[in-house]
Image 1 (cartoon, rainbow, N blue to C red):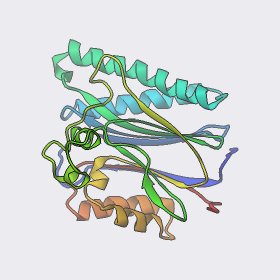
Image 2 (tube, helix red, strand yellow):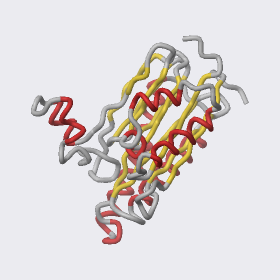
Image 3 (tube, helix red, strand yellow):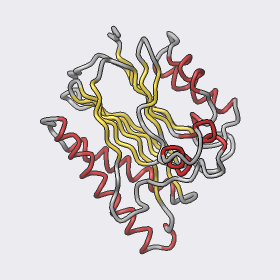
Image 4 (cartoon, rainbow, N blue to C red):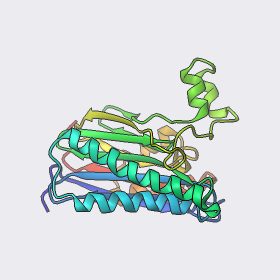
Length: 252
């Protein structure tokens, strides 16, 4: 298969140590043109609702991506993301209001689309995207939580976000509003490693430890397993979902 970037990837979800059901999903796909799609979802609404919502979003994106023979531009990729998620958002929203069993259903999404030399990030909720280069490890996505909203509007300080009583309250997700609102950003891609994860990872593993694991010489799959193992060792307070892409010829 032809790849625009020579790399390896791995993705995995884990129940954690506390939850009785797994509402997380993760997926990485590469098409014959070398376009890369990474997705992590974290469902909400309880067992059978959250897991349904997160899986429906993953499946919808997977099916749509596989049906597309080619992408023609970065704008075409963004249109694909918006159109695909608009359709699945309506399906989830309509179902949650027509069937009492699915009331309150929704899911976060963090999506990374690698097209040519552009990295497109789409986000709704508090699942995250990080990139790792030789020089830095940083978060590209922005948590769409009530606590983060209070910080951005100057009502609380940055160090209060992690302890705020409403730090887990989402202000955006797929399926909770009639129309979806996506935070989409485009970056120049310079062969960085790309990490997507649910809050079950970053709430249980601090940023320096995540970076240290990613900087080891272990295989991509081993790094993903190590991240999940450390999250569980530190309490495993939620489902954990991780997707990791690494360029083999990284020369940053």
